[in-house]
Length: 149
Image (tube, rainbow, N blue to C red; front, top):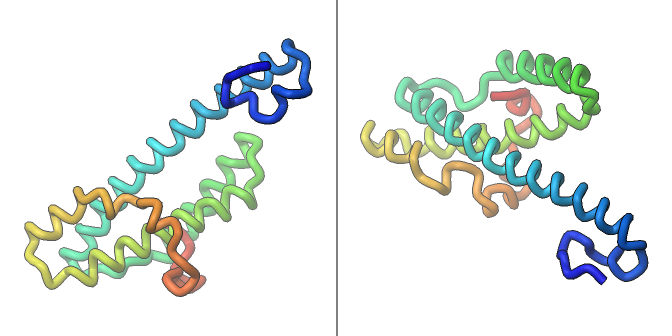
C-alpha cells in the first residue's frame, strides 16, 4: 500500500502499476495547481496597482467595456486551448468580481494620502486572500460590473 498522500483511497484497491501512474498524474496536477496559485497572486498584484491608479485619478472601479472585450478574448483563447469557453468565462467572471471588490475597497480609502494608496498596493490582504475568496453574495458586484478587469 502506498504512503504517498496523492494515492488517496485508491491505494487500498488499485494494482501498484496503476497506482504509480495515478500518483504521477496527480503530482503533475499538484504542480499545475501551485503554478495557478502563483499566477493568480501575480495577477492580483498587477490589478492592485491598477486599483491604486484608478483611485488616485478618481476612475470607476469597474470598466464594463474592457471587461467585455477581455471575456471575449479569453473565450477565444480557451477555445483554441481546448478549454470549455463557458467554464473560462465563469472562472474569469469570478476573478473580475474579486478585482472590482478590491478596487472598490481602494477607492473607499481614497481619502487617504497618495502614499497610503501606494502602500495599499503592497498589502497581502489586497491580493485575494482566503477570506476574500469566501466573501458572500452580498459583496458581489452587479452583473454590469462583472465583465472583466
